[in-house]
Image 1 (cartoon, one colour):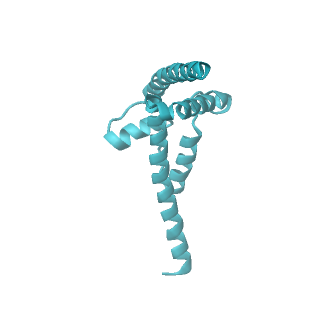
Image 2: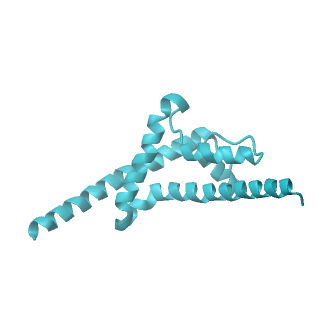
Image 3: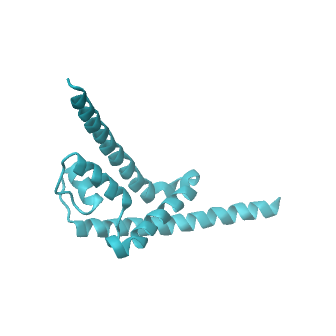
Length: 142
């Protein structure tokens, strides 16, 4: 195989690896944002992660629309480089179709994202506050 052919194959393989990496990490981030509050050791990181997610959704809204996600943007750039087109605007729409074959609308996916993330944020804040108060009270006892 010619050197240029090997380089092209290596580039495609790198993009495929990057595509799968985004799929796993972005999906993992969604699950962590939704359920990371459940374990005391991950609560603080969960609160930071949700805060960063909501911040991105709101800060980038004037330019890209409410709920814009940089992870989705970067993942879609990789998919376009692989020749994939017709991707949905919402990552959850893509996940439902890819992992279950269930077709949902972007509108439903956006509602699902907000109705999942906001309760997770509330629970995360409440549990982090409770943990902080307990540690503060424990410190005052000593």
